[in-house]
View 1 (cartoon, rainbow, N blue to C red):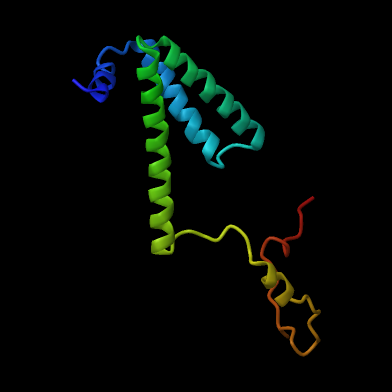
View 2 (view 1 turned 30 degrees about the vertical axis):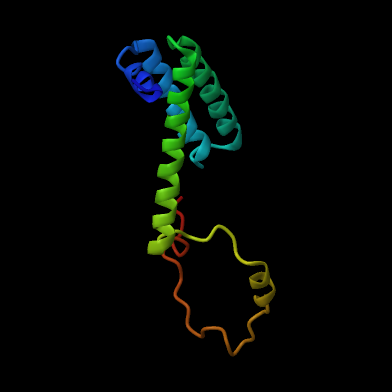
Amino acid sequence: MTVFDDVFDSLTTMNQSQLLLAFVACIGYTVAQGSLVSGRGRGIAVAATLAAALGFVFHSGAWAHGAVLMAFAIMGFGAFAAIVWLAGRLLGLARPNAAPADAADAVVAEPLDEAARPSVTRPHPMRSRVPSA
């Protein structure tokens, strides 16, 4: 029996509190990595992840097996995120995060002269209403 067999056999002996701690650690990790919440929310998610992961490790029968399981879980989430990001970039679905530095210099805000402005404009439907008294 190898070390990995011992680690995976410890999965069958997990109780409800260990499963809850592992769930909180995994969900907290995904929230901390995404942009779903603000910076303060991500900080709280990081703290919850660390607390739940440490709780899971210390609550395990053999703490080394719990640490290996947490490491595999976090590496699995990281690998999944990397695969999704790479697939999005290859398929052209990902938007660039920021404009290149030279693109800001290329766009010059010049006022339009009178010849370039449209001659006929249609009023906005919500702005053309007269408020009722």
